[in-house]
Structure formats: structure tokens, C-alpha cells
Image (cartoon, rainbow, N blue to C red):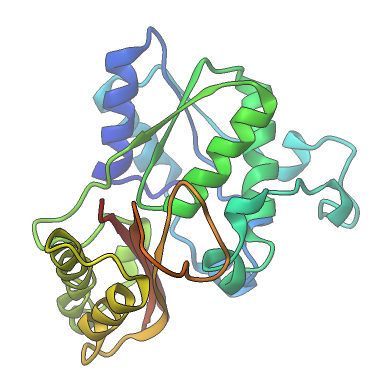
Length: 258
């Protein structure tokens, strides 16, 4: 969605290493914002984005408007709700709960972008973990493209790179690496043999305390059997996921435990 950073460029480099041509769409998608104020303040700098992409060898950057992507389909400047795609079971809970309608907007625009470009492969960063699952399931239902999930790129402090990081003030930026610290502490507990989701989530929550965050969720899920609620019993595999508010800035992160 623009305001490109090193994480996005790493996706492009990975794609360039595996394909003959790489196309990048830059589009702040209004369909996936449930908060108009968040859409309004989302950072945008298309010229800077184009220079960065050119610098790493991307062959094409393209954008558009909602009307151009959905010609003749808008009503009052918006896409009717019945035109939004069902994002599937991976949208249940967590981001799906705190951002109602978000994943339907993601699935709808990504489906249309796949129609426009016709890619053989599509590259997404794991920082938006639940979104990755939604897109992967969408591609499976379509029968194309192959979805390649790439590791989260981080600052030296451990903070996951995000376009929203530019909106953090000095105090919030100093506190933000505690998110990765809490995730790492949870993984360390997993590595000792702990497999109970309640205990793992409690450690994750404790790691976020005292840093000025408003915690929306600090949870553990089975990535291969996604559920709206925290799974019960012994986990064979798991990912820890976090969403917090740092002032007016919403930050998300995750870390595979298994």
C-alpha cells in the first residue's frame, strides 16, 4: 500500500531472483479500512516508491483508483457490500474481530489485482500473518497464483518494519521493540517444551505490560487449523500474534513458535 520500506524491497528482490519479470502494485485500498481517519493519514509518496523500486530492478509499478479497478461497479463512490468476497475461515478472530470488514476488502482487491496482472507467483510478507493465510486460501480457491510467503524484515531493535512506524513519536519508538521481545520470550518458553496455549499467551501478555501499549490481543494459534478462539489442549504447532495501540498508531507482529 505504498510508503515502501526495506521489507517491501526484500519481497521485490526475492521475486526478482525467482522470476523473469516483477510487477508491484501500489494502491492504498479503501476497501480494507474500517476507520476513515486511518485511511486519511496512511502515508503516501508514490514518487519515492517509484525511485525505490527502480533502484532494486522492479520492471513495473502500477496503481489506479477504485473506479478503475471496478469500472461501472461502484455506487456512490463505494463498492456495494454484496460485491465483497468472503475471505474464508482464516479471517476469523483477531484481526477479523478488531477490524471488521478488513479481510473482505483485502480479498476483494487482491482477487482483482490477480485478474489484472495474471501473475504466476505473488509475494507477501509474513508480518501480516493472518492476511497471508487469507490470500493463500484465496489463491487456492482461484487455482492461481502460487503464493510465496516471505520472512518479516526487522530493524536492528527487533521492531518489524512497517509503513506505520513513521508515525511513531520518540517515546513510542523506544517502547515498540518490546513487542518483539515478548514474542521471543514466548518462543523461548515453547522451546523448553511448553505446549499449553493459555500459558504461552499469558507469557506473551506479560511481556507487553508496562510499555504504554493498549493491547488489543496477545494470542497463540495453530497456523494449520485456524480458529476464532484460542485452541485448547496440547499444541503440535503454533504462532504467537500481537496487536497493540501505541498512541494513535496500531502495530502488529507475530512469530512462529514451532
